[in-house]
Amino acid sequence: MRRLGAAVDPPPPPPVLEPHLLTPMYRIGGDSVGQEAAAAAALASDLSERLRRLAAAYGEWRTFEPEPYFDLYSEQVALLARVSERVNTVHVTFYMDALLPSFQAALDCLAWEMAPARYQDGAYDLAQATMAEHWQRLLAVLQAARRRLADDAGFLAGNGANEERSRWRTAWQEPPPPGLSPLLAPALEETPTLTLSIEFPLPAYRQPGRLRRLRRAEQRRQASRRQVGRSLSKP
Image 1 (cartoon, rainbow, N blue to C red):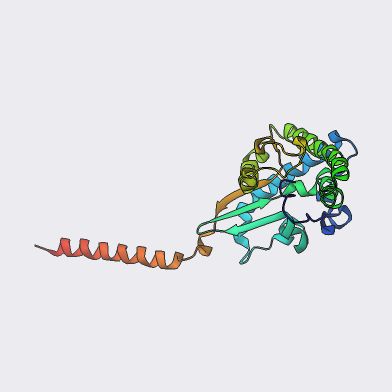
Image 2 (cartoon, rainbow, N blue to C red; image 1 turned 60 degrees about the horizontal axis):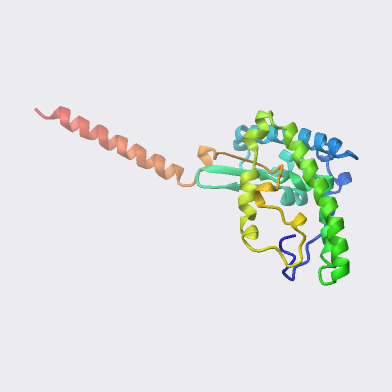
């Protein structure tokens, strides 16, 4: 919403995230805020545990395949998960918000109603009022889900809210688009999320330059032993 001032049309929810294309684990149902929040909290808890186990399982793959591990199609993985290998660590992020029906309804409204109406004063005001209803529903679901997860150790360990806010901080550093309702321009710190993230050591055999470092360490040990031997052989 904060980027509506640019000549960019936000896309609607990708069809690959429609419930019938997801495995049952990822289908979040519920007609009420409480029901959707309960289902979202349960999924967040399950995903947190799956991410925790990944630290031990990652080394079993020569090249990690997120599709079978997360039970998702490649098109779904591209939208929901990011796996990046760094020098000696692996960082994994899972964007769970995109699976929420309330999130998808809000994105649908943004793409098909609010964005096309932004150059029409009367229509834009009406579209913003509709969008505000979707936004408040999404906020209520996210806040209720996070309350349910307040004592979930796995979720707390994998809570990626700060990382997600850092990702969007530059957008919040710019003023909101002209005419955007204050209801649709909350402070970044007031925007909840169920994004999950985890970082763990990259298996030693996968770390770049590991063999070179091992050879150098062995050479230093051999040089040290030779030095000790020469010292002992001296009269």
